[in-house]
Amino acid sequence: MKEKYFLQILLWYIKGHKKTIIMDSIFVAIFAVVFSLYSLELEPVLYASFLSAIAAVIFIVYDFIKCYKKHNKLCIFEKQINIGLGKMPTADNFIEADYQSILQTLYEQTTEMISKTDIKQTEMIDYYTLWAHQIKTPIAAMRLILQSEYTEQNKELLEQTFKIEQYVEMVLSYLKIDSDSSDLVLKNYNLLQIVKQVIRKYAHVFVRKNIALDLKEMECTVLTDEKWLVFVIEQIVWNALKYTSSGKISIYMEDTSQKVLVIEDTGVGIADEDLPRVFEKGFTGYNGRADKKATGIGLYLCKKILDKLSHTITITSKVNVGTTVRINLSSVKTIIE
Image (cartoon, rainbow, N blue to C red; front, top):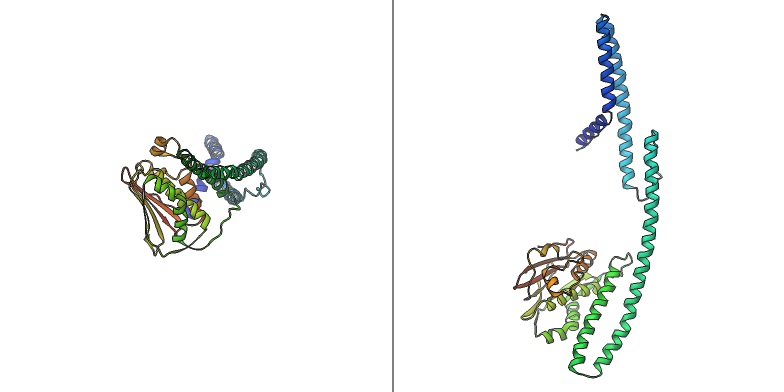
């Protein structure tokens, strides 16, 4: 590998000095023709040529070594460029100095632009975080008012209020997940208790849509963050409920030793061409376009959260048969089948 790299640098060097090599060759040819025309003795010509060749080789080797060392310094500098341009090698000529000046100007402009963008991004995140927290108060008040009198209209309004709460939680999670100060608290938790939290939250949706729940007993303790894992399972169960009109949703452990949690539904399924992209930000696929209300954010957040928790997620599906989501709570790679 090193020999190949060295040869590549040598070829670059030769290509960079192509004009000089051609010019020197022309000079040699001119001298050879002149000496031939004047019928000079061959021995002093060859001797002078030999000495010139030795001097040329020494100079080329020295210059190549210098260029090679400078190239290595620039490779090291490239990896440290986020620190600043202070350690850039000294320019050997005015062209290099011009390039370094251009780089310095671009670096300063980019740094200033990034700083302004970060400030705007922070202000925007702070604003939406405050908004998301404040909107919870009127939503809670609406829920209390609607629960004070049981009517079919209020029942429907409560369902819509529940969806609003879901979207607000998604906004908060979206804002928090990319933050360096994400409040991850890793502890050992009973997986069944985490799943039951989600089931209690969506129990009324199971009843309203007349969808059966098949929850298997599971003796499994996982090292995770409870709040974030609950959010992930909520998103998956909510998707299963949203795209399942009849049948059941099953939740069980496929492999207790590997801690693989399975959430399986009998819904509309996901098209084969959509499967590789389900975790992309904003991707809704065929089902999302048909639903008209999908955001393409839920599974994207699930993937990001599970990556942070060092868990993995796998989705398999067949159209009009159902979707199976597997969450591996012990491994470190995200897979889509």
